[in-house]
Length: 295
Image (tube, rainbow, N blue to C red; front, side):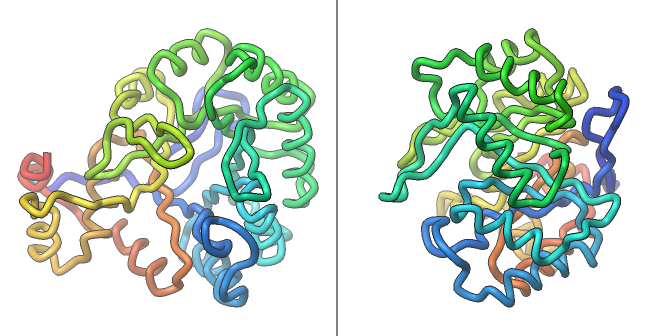
């Protein structure tokens, strides 16, 4: 028996302006230069990746004005503006980059407002459809104060829907008490499901909040969804890949698509060939037995 991964998902389904999108999006973080800094090594290919993704049915793009700086936003605008009517561009605020390329919080209300205004300008939009508040450690700014600033800009019409990124379970529970949370973006892949320590801080895993997202009908958007550095003793994903004559990356993405209907992977790449390969995961149907074997 095969299981069927739903081809679409709706962000904020019970709101006045729901956003239906295809369940494989594209994350732009890999487009800038090394360390997510500066212009892409191959600008023409970066632009073509964005255009090809949309041509092949991708209508959810994930970006941030601190990718580059502003590099991915400018590439999106150059490649795709005027935007297709069904294209959803999701950006993030709450962080910034220093000249030494470090990642630091930028989450005071005035910072968040400056980031939104910058995203609107660089993307060429009057309203951003979905904005994730990226949590980088609250420091002196409580989560409530950050979210209140986001909801204020939502009331002003600068933001359509507000989401959270890099959240622990308690933080998501608090966010849900404070207002409508449209989506969550956390690290999640077949091999990396719980919190992982990275150079710029801890990244909570998707598994820690998945059941809450399911209960509330909130899309969970895995970033680093192609992180699959498995222990050498665990070759299950490779075995399933050989069974279907697929790549391990495709099986990883298919596992996410079959794991839960609220998952919306956004695999990123700076290679046009890898983009096409990743999108073929939409056609890979895993059986119930496959899913049980993968765990």
